[in-house]
Image 1 (tube, one colour):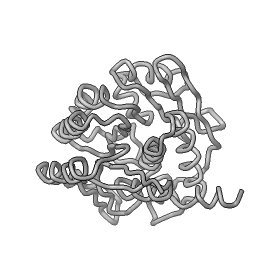
Image 2 (cartoon, rainbow, N blue to C red):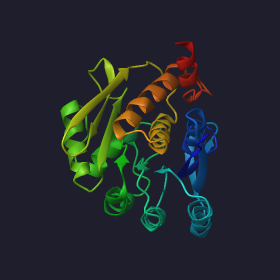
Image 3 (tube, rainbow, N blue to C red):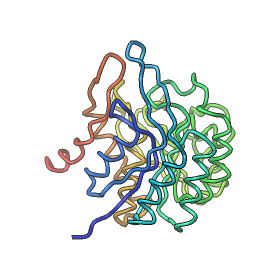
Image 4 (tube, rainbow, N blue to C red):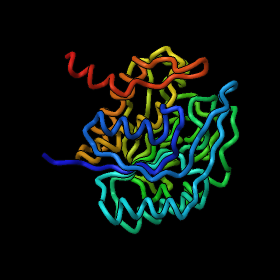
Length: 276
């Protein structure tokens, strides 16, 4: 039996719904062996659920990457919360050094699950570092509407046509594919629509909209599912379609974790396939 391996360079979400926890759960459910290089630890203030980010030492990150990339090897890699230009550069250097091809960049700029358009970026200079260092080395990037607007240098994105414009601008930065995620936050549509662009063709990927506030970690899960598909040899389009089904199933069966948020159910997709 062939064993596929994937690495996530991401933060640890103490609540378990996002970050490396979501990535590892997704890898496992999709039959991929997951490994982690942690960049930070995210904690929450219990009475308000406001986020606090504690960055880890960059030398520790380098040692984690050496453990995995020098000592084991991977079939695919994704990034999640990187948190600083220095960490972005470390990730970019590791990708370049090891000539990695199946690279998925989830350009986390604020803590997911909140209203992104109302938040400041984690650090404004991160956007420039993503554009200059990481996107030219990536196979695909998976920004949500907020992140796509920042990377593309546009205003707030609210229509499918604006998603296409942003995707085209992002591909112009050097990434091979851009997946702009409208999801449930794209207004005036009956379905959760994403746009995949390869520099030539726009592909619309959609699933049902699920009316739930419990979408904590959905973006991490989506990108991790794409990474798992690429690790197993799927094409980008195949990996994205599978990932869309995976995350939609998880949102459909999401649950409330506390008074503030709830995660996707990472086991839902497998149950859905078994039931067919």
